[in-house]
Image (tube, rainbow, N blue to C red; front, side, top):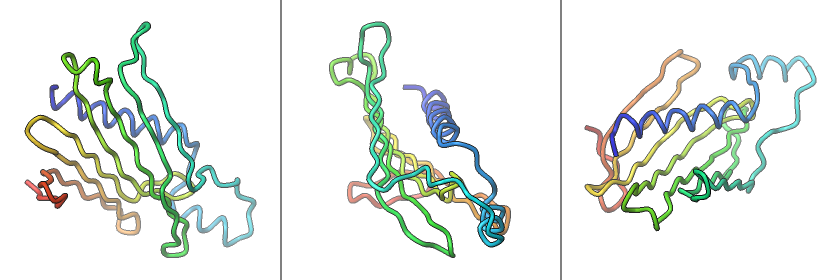
Length: 156
C-alpha cells in the first residue's frame, strides 16, 4: 500500500476522532475555566469505553476499527486519558489490502492531544510515526522510524 495514502488515512482518522469527541479549548484555557468556578461539561471520555466500527463498501466488510480508552491519570493538575485504536482489514480480502495499523494516544477531557503514535505493519516490518505536543512552549515534536522485534522504537 502506498505510504502517502496510508499516512493520509492516519491523519484523516485522527482528525475524525478528534472532531467526533467534541469542541475543545487549549489546555490552559480549560484550567482557567475550572479555577474560576465556571461550569464545565461532563467528561466525554470514559475509562474502559470501547467502540467498534465495521467498515463496509457495498455489501463487503473491508475491515474494522476499534477504539478503547485504556487508562486515566492525573498529570500536572489535568486528567489525561490513554486511548488505543486498532485498524484491521478483513483477512479474507488480504489479496487486495492487508492493513494492520495501531494508534496510541494521550488526550485530556477537552480532547487536546498530548502524544500520538501510529504503528503501521507492513510485510517488511513495523513503521511508526510519533507526535508529541508541548503546549506550554508552543512546540510539537515529530519522529518516524521502525520498531524491532522486541518492540523498541528506532528513529530514522
